[in-house]
Image (cartoon, rainbow, N blue to C red):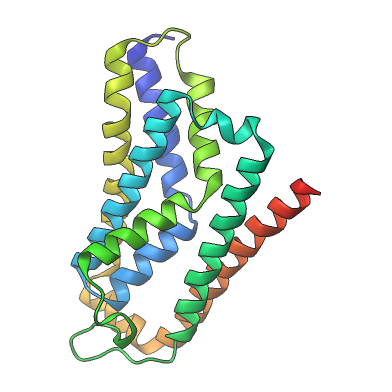
Length: 213
């Protein structure tokens, strides 16, 4: 497989993975609904940065360590699951809090853009399946002796793929009409988001423990 074909194939695979619903989608959509568009876009940049980190690690071959060293994979998966449970608890706790006239959730009214970026980044990095997905895609598609330009182009390109998709999500869910619907259904939508995040977190922890046993 030549370098151009490999690049296009990896971009397509990562794009499909990003579009698939998961904790990252739940986080960006809810943040865009309950805070501001800028906060949602900041979280999207955090997701993209997480993708950049995973792509860089995959290029360097470091993500193979997660599959080689059982204890490292266990720790990464357990901590990632615990972080998702923490996020689920925060969403659940704020479900009954109303949306203010400004459209900003009282629970996140003091949330800075830097903090929104950090939450997006940590949500992306907390999912070990993403790192394994990146490593698997790179291992399956990368040429045996990839050219230097391909190794240099891949990380920033995949940052654009991840950040671009979640920016679209942020823009879609921060619209006035969607926000008004969310304001009416906020409590139950937040409970649903909390349940999804919690289930994903619990699943990661259970898989880590079962794999350890």
